Amino acid sequence: MEEQKNNIVGIRFIKIGKMYHFEKGKVDDLTLGDKVVVETSRGLQIGEVAQFVDKPAEASEGSLRQLIRRATPRDLAQRQIYLQKEDEIVDYSRKRLKELGIHEVKIVTTEISFDGNRCTILFCTEREDKVEFKSLKQDIHKQFNLPSVELKQVGPRDVAKCLGGMGACGLEKRCCSRFLTEFNSISIRMAKEQGISLTPTEITGMCGRLRCCLVYEYDFYVQTRQALPKRNSHVTTPLGVGKVVDINVLKNSLFIELPEIGVREFSKEEVEPAMDPGNPPQISAEFKIDTHDEKEPQKTEGIKKNNPISNRRTGNRPPRK
Image (cartoon, rainbow, N blue to C red; front, side, top):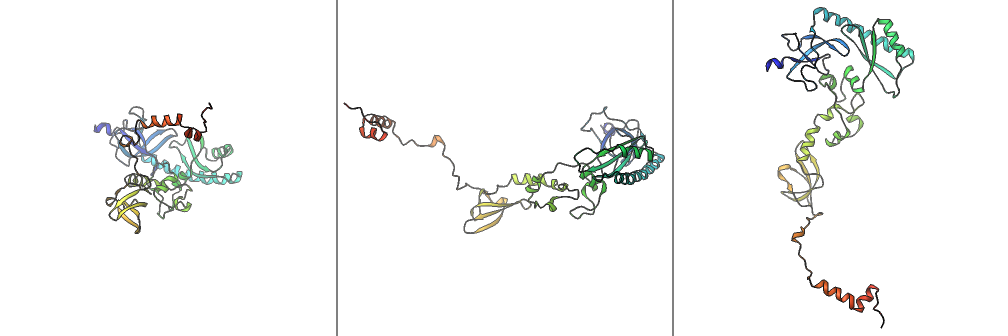
């Protein structure tokens, strides 16, 4: 079992990035933090061993790519040269876009493959139509002698992750740049469930999107509320029956409005469900008492048929003789 565990490793290409799984192959004696050379869809890359796994969820053993070899000191030195070149490409691309009059596009960062054959430029834009980068690609190809130049659009959260900086909450470093490797789907409902103010400045991050931290405690609030009485429901307290007007999820307590007393706070253990006076329970059909005599409908029917007074009320007169 230990041999199978060490056969699949998780590789990260940036410090705070998504983890990809590879088979160890012929590379032995790996430890966490080792630098290895792997083949990806964007060419050869240098990655760091971040985890040993039993079985990856997205693929079965045998369908994963294998590690090529350990990274040598020469490989690491070559990577440092490419890092300097990436900064030069970013500066040149921004300057060139300004000359071309394309102001709606912002260059975020650049990635050069380990073999130097492919350059990927990450950018962001709010334009809905497609931006033409043919001229920019040709200029970068001639200026830096790169065989392949690709521009890839990323979202605002990816931009914030790459740039880093202080978070809107006051942390010295944003969560996305510290430990978040993937972005979850976040909705305004998460803020409502936690009772957070819906003021845009309170729930919006530096990226202009809903804050990633809204999802941290969302499941806790949902599970806790399910075990507590709902608002406007009636409960029995040590001071009598009252209506729930508010809930404190963190303290696991309820604010109950009591007649002639006012609003008081009680813990979950001090209250019990009570009958809502506005909605009394319905009596089951099997317990209802029939107060009519079985022969009475027959007498009534006969009176209606032969009694002239009854016929006069219904508008049906008896036939003249």
